[in-house]
Length: 502
Image 1 (cartoon, rainbow, N blue to C red):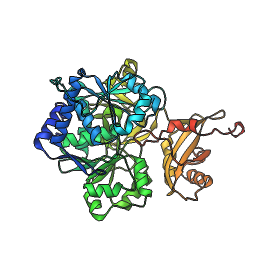
Image 2: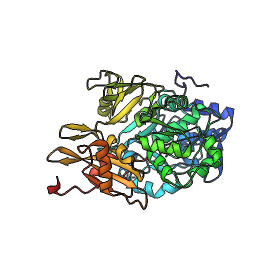
Image 3: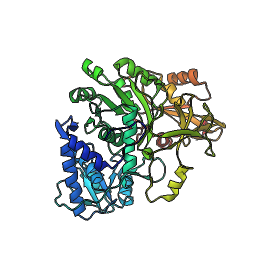
């Protein structure tokens, strides 16, 4: 099977894993253990696990809860479920007990594969009483047939309000998710990605794991991201690209570790997604390390990527997550009509990588789609070249005195200070203005920067009206499993001002 820039990959994950196994070569290396997993061995182990699940009576399309960190066991469980025609249900280990218990019950699974390191977490959250089934389970039965339109992946969104929604992807949309990254980044068999994001999140699973499957490349997969070991692991594993989130880029930028010259030369690009990358952070990272950062954008509902900047020497527009690859992206008004270029509206997507549905939630599924387009809830403008510039989230807009303030604009001003590692502006209810602006920041250890200094910085860049009324200094900002700062949680976590301050 070869990749086309215009047509998504056909077949199923089983088909693609069979082809990779027949071709041979390395699939994944694990830097912390020195273990190497070849495509043939991965197919062998996945097929054996699929046979054991079938022998236990699992039905075609039934959920298998996978409770594992990044590991050989986790990858085998994922591919085993997909190979056997089951719905791989990736449990977010950072979601907390209640959210995990909800997912275990909502997904309808009878069985779970649980990593040794996750036994306590699983036991605390296993209210539905799922049975554990290990990778070493014996038994074989004829595998279920698998079709491109069959359920393949169930992943729960990390929403900040209400119950998480279970996003269902088919084999076709899951493969298309890997394909959009492969064609945007020109991935090939010679490439080795660095999978430091959890594969229980759509970025880690689709961009790196599915991206390597459809491109024929390989991965280096540590159990978790480590700022102090990142460059050493990248050197030892021979990686040629990596996919991370803005907080990781910021931590690497403010860390002491440096890549050696050979690693700098070998890494073609770094990829940023999951939330907006501050212009100052991207510029400073590239200046220090000499490695281009390609900003992108994706959603759980679109099997990750919808937008990407081209690779150098293509035009990368700093501050934009790029243009559409492998799908259609439009900016629409409230009625669903496309707005003129340069006009703000909501990002809408349609294409082969879009989800099938929200599991057991027809109302939410219907609300997510309009005239065949998936509504993302993100506000943006598109320029004449098709590059999208995100201005905020519909749910995150700060409306102060009737004026819309995009939190990202305030974030960008705060990131301009060299000591700011993380920043997030948010709305606070206010009787005078309706809402007012506050911000939370994390600064480098030992920084002498004060609230007053950051306030003056914002006033100079934004003017007094958009400048935060209060600055909160935190050791860590709340984040989801992908490392995305959860802005909507800040108002509840941080103390409100006294009544007389409003």
